[in-house]
Amino acid sequence: MEGVSFAEKRLRVSGIKILIIGFCCWITFNISGYAQEIKEPNVAGTFYPDNPQQLSGMIDGFLDALNPPSKEGQIFALICPHAGYGYSGGAAGFAYKLIKGSPYKTIIVIGPSHYFNFNGISVYPQGFFRTPLGELEVDKDFTKKLLYKDKDVFFEPAAFEKEHSIEVQIPFLQKTLSNFKIVPIVMGNCNFLTCQKLADLLKAAIGSRKDVLVVASSDMYHGYSYEEAGIIDGLTLSYLKDMDVHGLYKGLEEGRMQLCGGYPVVSALILARDLGYDKLNVLKYTNSSEVTGNKNKGIWTVGYGSCAIYREKACMPAGRESNMLNKEQRKKMLMIARSSIQSYLKTGKKPELNETDPELLKEMGAFVTLHERGQLRGCIGNLVGREPLYLTIRDMAVEAATDDPRFPPVTSDEIKDIEIEISALSPLKRIESTDEIKMGIHGVIVRSGSKSGVFLPQVATETGWSKEYFLSELCEGKAGLSRDAWKDKNTEIYIFTAEVFSEKDY
Image 1 (cartoon, one colour):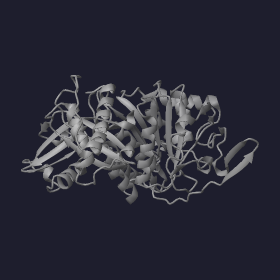
Image 2: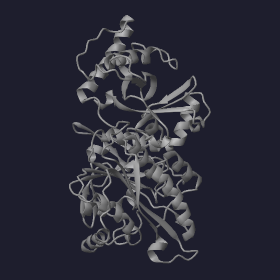
Image 3: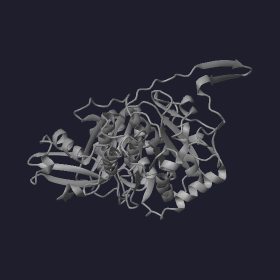
């Protein structure tokens, strides 16, 4: 039940690398980076029974006591408590009952560091985690896509040496799923950018897979007041329900809300929103005083929340509601964009193109976005289709490379480092209420008089802004209006969807 402050500072312990020259081989051995082949449990016999039959029966008891909750859409992530099973096991059961029997193959378990102070993120690279219910293999092919891809993502074994936040999730997983591997991640002291980095690495590693589940391990309020627990956790849950990542992070930093696994939860929310999972359902909330029946003042109280993050089955990821283009058509559009830029840089003229595909001959709006080494390098588009899509892509690609006033023109030497992203747009729809806007699904245009501004759907997932902040930034930053102009009945608001695809997808 012990937790640490969300803002607690931690010191990173670096590994010592020794290069050993052997017979016909070179061996790199990281003394502090040694992963045990079998990671023995830390809290079996204390947080949960160390007897396999007792442990199995206890979890069955949690699950059997629950009426099967209504199945959400496509569940991508869970938020589960990590206290002793006698306190939080009942709440955790709500989440695990929901996914029982699902065909997940990789489970990413992200927990906070309670005992070891360090900066950054420690990923367990390979081997097995043992519980009384058996051994569970680490997905080393997946962890290779994370480790050392950023200076803040590494393996520090001391982070796992005593930690329980990962371990207590594993028996529940073993009882509800089969034929899967795990990716254990412990987060030390991080800022929002570090959480974003982890989400970005996980997104790249997941790719188009639909058999990955994320479990963010976190308890909630820690303090000596049952009444205060209800107030603070109620506020925290309201931000979780809205998936307001920035508001949640700020509230945790300021101490208005509490999650001992705050960084794991923030990272999971960023990742989920970025992949188009835009709904969160609070399955169960309780606290230790409720469980024990002792609500007297001065009794140590810890909050336990169980949540599922999902998207409705009709929704598509990353700003799409339906597929307008198939894989080959998207690849062709990306090839047209790149070849058009190359041709224009070489000849000063747009290439002549011919196309017979009926979908690519439709008049559609589109944006072409250029990134260079992860940084924006240009973005130009037409909201309303005035010519066939393939010609719009040609023209917008050239303009993004040569005529975005925010950047100097792309050079021939740069083109090899440019990554191209295309957003093919649906027709515009005027709305009467901002309640119709689905964040991460809809792009939005505001218009008042001669002033207008637009945000593409992916702006919401990339920033994690709340709807109100998104609209205020759109009005002020893009349209040159007052921040609350979107509330004015005379301001026109339009929505659209975008099919977003990038060269990195292929």
